[in-house]
Length: 189
Image (cartoon, rainbow, N blue to C red):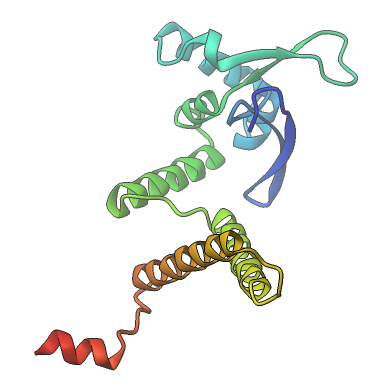
């Protein structure tokens, strides 16, 4: 995401929706939003933020930004995802406990598996990949038309070859690779 692009998103937390601002590859919330998220008084959030800065766990310059928000007569402070997580590990509420359990499970899964899967992005990438495959097949059909130059045919053949190689790698990654019988016989000699 470009640093000047701003978008809004929603995070559904324990069946409650919290409006978030997505900018500079992080999520930004106000103190009130954090209070709503963790179901605790805003004054408690303020105290925890102050202590986080005092102990130099996080630095204000990179974790706070002031923005003008509709229906507000002065700029409002927004806090980064790092701050939200730090506060989440400090608050003493039922939602704070639920947050810590969730965050610890995500971290544990990441450390044990060595990666984290974003199902939404994966499905979007899979859709794009399938669309690309369809496009390559269409392009492959174009080389049969008269008037297509040898250079164009060569480029299409290279693209088709790479596409086939990507399919084979994908099948291997997902343990769907079928080895042709003639290759098996050769290999087993």
